[in-house]
Length: 195
Length: 352
Image 1 (cartoon, each protein chain N blue to C red):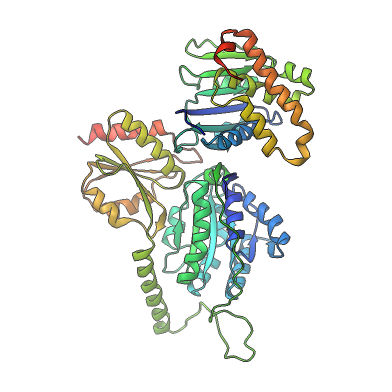
Image 2: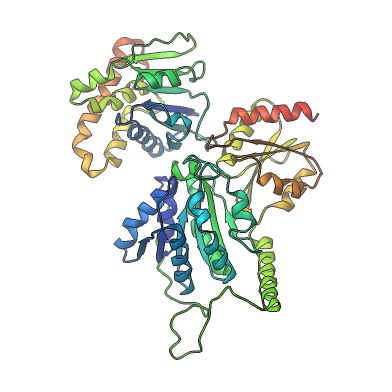
């Protein structure tokens, strides 16, 4: 199944209640179902201080040693404190996906790829601010296609708990809207992707 | 069976259920609580015993009682709670009954914090509690190993009638990874010939840890030591990675061991010949193999999430054959592969 050689350390960071843990787990489920090695750990370090919740996901085609990284490859930034914390840490050449609805701050680092998505606004339009997480994941996977968004949809179908299943369609919609937003801003991505 | 995405603590709990756990006694403490939480639902569902005790002192003594009947039983805790269990652990060990106890280690000393640590290494490997013995100590470095070692722990405990401690740091307890659970085993209703099952129609049996006569106590000590010798000859477990041509050897267990694995990969990309020995049993310790490897490398670097505890065992094993350096983080801070790589480079620079 998973034939591409990849190794990505991805951090999801925001407020508690923004669905940070869930969206990280969703990516982990999709990566597992796709045949990749994967680890997920909740905010479990000094970074717990300061009102942010975050989780680390490592997706790899090879067995994973460290389930954490000092300098992650990708950061999904849901709020300002998370921007302040992780923007300096993403490795050079890495990707910063920023929820521009809540983060006005721009990065001064030229070595980063930056995608700004008004994710909370888009999520509200889809039906609920609580879908911000899915909008940002859809955007991220469009720029950094380690898994097709269809794999996330399948993971939602397979692993979403029964009492949350009424939110399934909205999540799938939110993932797609996040992806669309990025593709509209970067038309060159339209040709290179098979979403 | 297919792989599931499982949290370390939950994986241990479910593996214990499937290994035929009949009774669990415990008290909640972070970062171990999901283990107890999972069993609080699963055990009653299966008609088995789940009992939340009033304290860790109570839990370990309830365990002592259940084990005395020959049942598969266990408890779990995290560092401060594990300290409270010391007396009971020593009694269980002295009574020659099989027991399984899980310690999900957190920052210390004292109440410390809830973050991952390996600060209990001395406590678990020297003798959990007072007296003169060693428990078998299993140190998983992944969720799959946490599952496999849980099943193994019950088997080893019963085979040797000995105490087995599963010692993991909070990171392994909190992490989710794809892993495969074992098939459900039937509960073993057979009770061994030492178990307290009610003496009606047979001579009475006694389980005790009290020997007031010195000769009687020493005889028990000798028996324990003879058993420990057999265990160390047969149950020492470790994993090696790229040690064949290594100039430098990393030694680490649990999370520190798997992070050291990443450091080996980085070092190799930089052209540094680094290998890893990851002990899976902290007692018995892979001393002989370490001694052997010490003869072929230029230096050893011990990596731990403490101030240097296994370091003592590595130094004893290496016995001066080669320099042994140390890299550790404390307080719940998880070492990063880059930091370990830096320590290797420094060692290489200083020990050319």
